[in-house]
Length: 453
Image (cartoon, rainbow, N blue to C red; front, side, top):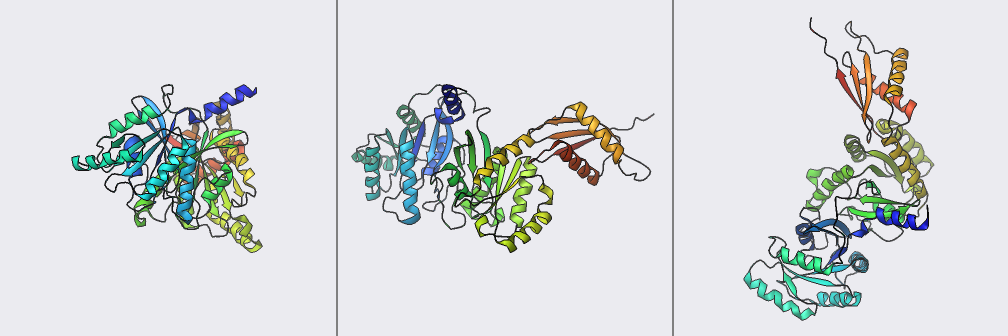
């Protein structure tokens, strides 16, 4: 492949062809609600706690037939220390990487010192800025919004993120600020492979994503549940672009979760649905838990390819290894087919093993067997190990076909209902014969009704 071809493939893989709008502003001025209004669906986590949105989060949006990407940033307080300081750094990165900025100010509060500091950074960036005066729910607040001309960022657009008031004018202004792009058709087809990184809170999902991306990409703090939003990230690995869908840790029980964790757990399952292959991160130093098994069940039910990564391997001693091997045999018996890798995300030890494992799992997920090969295999299998006779009857497999891949789905036409244990035997033999590494296999039976004479 020539350098020019490689470049065009690379850019075709990346949805950076859509211009990017970064949404910045102090904590709790209603950025996430406004983002939901712009993208037209409830995706950004919204809760009345300052700083709930902690990461840069990308969403696809369209207005008047033009597509663009909205990047929601963490609440930006220039005086912040610690975690908030890093959120501010993320917002700086978002501003530097975008084509235009929407600066959201709470019109009911007016301009604060923190806003003034943000304005300085925005002016320095030289990017076009659209000023959104949020929480303008009536005529009276609208008058207050015009005081924001004093920021020197041009016309303030009064808007109510909650009620949608003024959002059309704001969107028109956003399109005017963004560079023109060719009209976008449907979402990318055959773009980068989609990977969801899932697991309980605090097992190191964000550290793994950071290490893969090679930059401080996701806010990592040793507080369970720090990552609240799913963050799509395009990452170059092994010479190819992959789309990583990082998600908030699944909570023990959705019912017990507080507001933003509840949305986050819902989105973990939607991330599994959006992904092609799921990387389940398990803390190698801790016992495999019921939560881990519940995630595995969700991945199997969704029919996604699966890779299991045991993280924090540097903390696993000989004794723990012995017990972990026993746990794997006992707890992961349903997913013995999933490639397993041991990594230490913090140091990057063995994370180069992830791409071969992903490739293996995707290849298994997309394996197709010809009808001829499948039926000669079924013929041999039945001859070696016929279905047991039950009540004087012995169901037979008359014919089989693979209906689809991703995940591999087989339809077996039978003369009677096969027992679950025999189905498991067929699945085991299919794997021995054809591989199917990293993927669930679905078997469906069609029982041929006896003709009544």
